[in-house]
Image 1: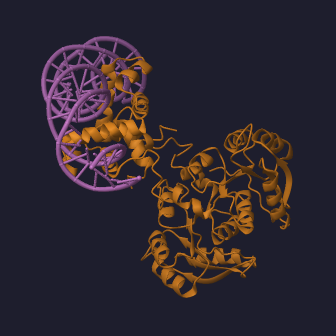
Image 2: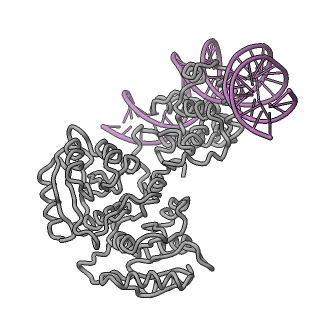
Length: 222
Length: 222
DNA sequence: CATATTCTCAGTAGTACTACCGAGATTTCC
DNA sequence: GGAAATCTCGGTAGTACTACTGAGAATATG
């Protein structure tokens, strides 16, 4: 609700950007891109999270463009630290993962945006401008996960569940007791129990309460 | 994953914007704001959702800046229609509600952004540029709800749970059996059972599997 | 101070789930 | 054709959860 004095490039000169990435090549690439635009100014480069936090304190940039995976302190930890100590700095997370399980955590960590490394120069500039002026920006590929749903890609099943097991899991997650699941699938209660046992084994949960989590994780509940 | 040919103002002239709001005053205000920027061009104005859909088809704007509440067809319905028929058009939703229960629905409806009417001119321009270039944009006030959790406001508990009940629910959702919950809270198993019973009664669930859902809904699991 | 709510705990009984074991039928794959 | 996986079902036993009733103690609430 409370705005943290967003940057407005029409009023206060160029947007000051601090880069944080452990790969020099990437930093050079970003710098090359941003140099072409007069509204943006790269004021420093950090090679890990801790350095990013320290440099943010000293340089007071408008935007911190930061990779997630870095040695010593990763981007998420750094983002959390900065939210606490330097809330005026807009953190824009850069990641290679277009399977963005992270997005939720990223926003919770206080970041103002999440962009992928395959983003175009134009989009990157737009993203920086967006977060600098007080908004949240996300790459287009991120969209579906913003609403929690797994959307198009039904999530690569990390547990190796069979089709039948998924059916049973879905029913269980809806709160149906074994008896009803059995009736719904036209099999015996014992069979459902078997599936249930296998399910818990495969996903490593101790009881029914946990199965809901897995069902949701697998996107079986939309 | 698939990009829908995002607009890039460096390559193809001004961003073509279609306005949709049932209040002329608001449209005039937006138009006045956008006119000051050469990269933006207002190509038309609609006064309701149906008109917005039709004009989108004819004018093929890059961005449709649309109010949520409009007569005949509201912004959400229009957004869904446009996603189906004109997926290349980026829909940016304008709303007065800073209590953004809508955000989830807005994104699901296919919109690429959600901004509040108290937004500054600069931010509005940034938002339009953002969605035009393929990203998602959200006003800063929207942030907390992006992650589902209510962040600052601990979610209005719709069930009227007591503090103790929330503690028990949290433990149950983590998969702990009653015995462990009892030990963790320093009470007897019977008491935990009582709480559990009351919980299921209050939230209307039949078994443990469902309780996880509620715990998550209440934001007890972060 | 009376009332209500919350939190605590117990008895009793029934239902549901968990944990093993084994095993036949079917399909898939090499 | 044999191996492997899947789906099916049963026995037995123990643990966990559900359902209902009742009730004392502490804490708000009026």
